[in-house]
Structure formats: C-alpha cells, structure tokens
Length: 226
Image (cartoon, rainbow, N blue to C red; front, side, top):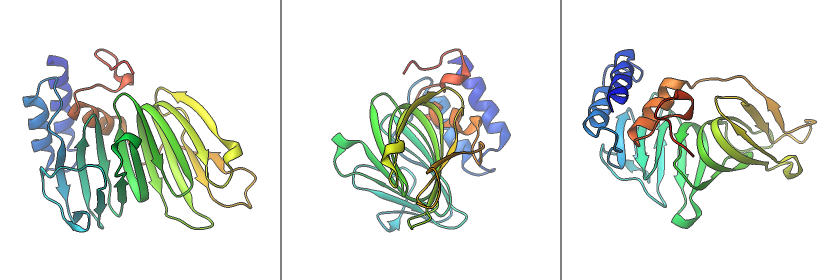
C-alpha cells in the first residue's frame, strides 16, 4: 500500500491531466488503499455525454451505454474491473449483453485497462479478442480507407482485420511491443502495418490500473498476475 501511495502522489505531481480533476482521482485512490475506487465517471472535462445526455461525475456506466466526448473534452471512468481514459472527439459504446463483454470504439481515442477474463473490442477496421490487457486505440472512423491505430500495451489479443480476416494474428506483449495500424484499404498489400508508440504513456496506464486496485505488469513489485 505504501508503494501505491508513493506512485499516486508522484502521478499527482506530474499534472498529467491538468491542474483540475486529478486531485479528486488521486484522493479517491489513496483513500481506498489497495481497493478499487467506486465504479462510474471519475473525471469529466469539457463536453461529455452518456446516451446523448450531459454526463455527471459519479454517474454509472454500464451495458447499453454510449459515452461521447466533444472537442477539447475528456472522461475517465470505471466499469467493474476495467478503467478507461477517453480522449476528445470520441464515441464508445458498451454492449447491452453483459455476457458478451463487448466494447465498440465508433470513432476517436481511448486508453483502456481490463481485468481478468475475455473481452471483445470492435473498431471500424477490426475485431480484438483480448485477455488481461491494457491497450490504446485511435479509430479514424468508417469508410473504404478507414484506419485504426492499436497498441497492445500488455496482455494477449486475437486480432482479426475486417477487410482481410485471413491475416488474423494472436500474440502477447509485455510493454508496448507491437503497435500497428490496421487498414481497410483493399489496395494495400497487407491490412496490418507496424507503427510507433503514440499519444499514450505508462503514467496514464499506472493511474488507470491504480483506480481498479492493480498495478501494470511492467511496473514490477505488486504487479497483477493475469
């Protein structure tokens, strides 16, 4: 618990999410010790809606809900064992059937950490079957030349490109080992091409995992065993 407190205080000092909002997140996490914080929306900035209605801090997010962020906006929320940092201009939907554990990134950018068990993520160019995972997604939306950025920060995935399911891959990473772009352009020789690590970092992953009472596997001591 002492190590976790040091981590959270260090994250607070970075001003990672700006001067407003981070103090509440850190305070909640510190108060919980090694336990997860309560489910729901924990930080809102700018215009955030749930099912097209203005969102409120503390509001629960669950099956069938759609979270959308406007320009210059951001939301951090917890659903069960999972935590999310949804960036501006993004729309994310959660399947109505809890047994499916389905999440759909309609468009935009989201960093996610997931607890034990299988999850399915759908984007405009692919379907991901994941387990014990932290991942970052940037989806540019549907269309013949749609493109999705995907970084499996850690965990395991079965990745199936929509335009070329025969190119499916199953792999495991430990620390941002295989970021890629997934395309929907049939003129390309391959739908999946290597990429660099962009627009997300370890401090954000540490904070999200701390909110649900875990450590990222790469952090070392006290890390979860997926």
